[in-house]
Image 1 (cartoon, rainbow, N blue to C red):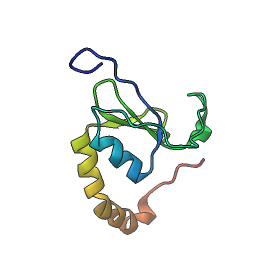
Image 2: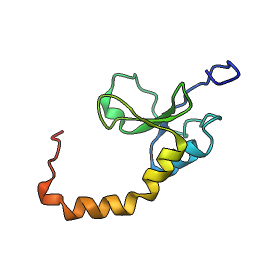
Image 3: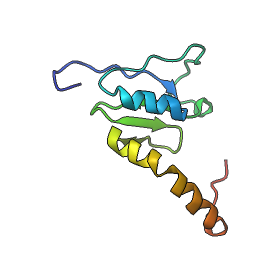
Image 4: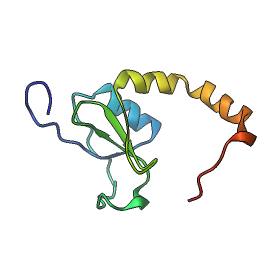
Length: 102
């Protein structure tokens, strides 16, 4: 629910960087599903990454791990701006990092 007590519907959108940025730019609004997006049951792991607006107004990314990763808009913007540094760090420490088997 938002501050006015209205229920905030949560639309599923495939989570490309552009889709996440679009949902972050309009957190009070909802982002309509893209054309051709398959509507699958919540329990299916074949769906990939997707975003929802959380009940508290944050952006939740589903499909990375068991629980969603939820941050507020400002946090997503900071994380996206940090992307180049994160990629450089991952490259520099590649030998030390473990991979999760699928």
